[in-house]
Image (cartoon, rainbow, N blue to C red; front, side, top):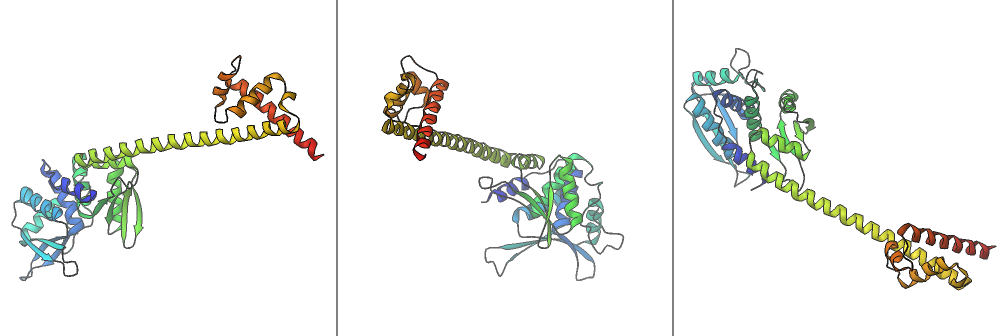
Length: 317
């Protein structure tokens, strides 16, 4: 099961306590998956269509708890995808449909022929109802990437108006939600890991939140270790390059004029560097008699380098 499916499975078990929160989540599901269709008798029925069993189950439970109306469930196998199923939940009685659409503020005008893409702000005026609405739209058209790979949360909307409505609700919780057009959809997305954690908390997907946090901690530890290793490797490489240059200069001086031509302090450091090519400056200083600090060793090696450069210039002349 994908991480996105795990989140939806958890959210499908989250049943709001208050009726107004149930109404808000039903409004989200109907606005994403619902449409009005004609019955054989010419009356209008409300149909909700989804390929996700968790969405069908959640909608059925919410409708039953909130409105106690008669529902009809049909399951059809997708011909092109043998393992895929389509779930259709019908509310056939027109007065039940009117009751639900009026409660969810999704009735478009008074003609009773179409559903609004977004409900009135009255449905989501409470913070708890905003949470419920986000649960509903995520269940219907949302997805979240496996956090071990990357951080990405999104909800697809069929119109710019609906995308803006969803983004506005997320932004009311200080979530930096953005909108991008992808094919025929307007996608509301969040990409920052800590903000996705906040979104899961808003939707009350606490188990998924803990799983994501565990992944984030492991990734941060791994990244921190990688940074330290890379830093140490860079320092080692820098030390090796510097030591190679120092030895090259010392050998040049030895071959041209001899190390005995150096002052006593410089000669001691030069001979020690040849004997200890892998030693750090601090280790070289500790081996001198008397011992010398890291900066003192570095100063003497720089003087040796200048002498070698001077001899090279003389040779060129």
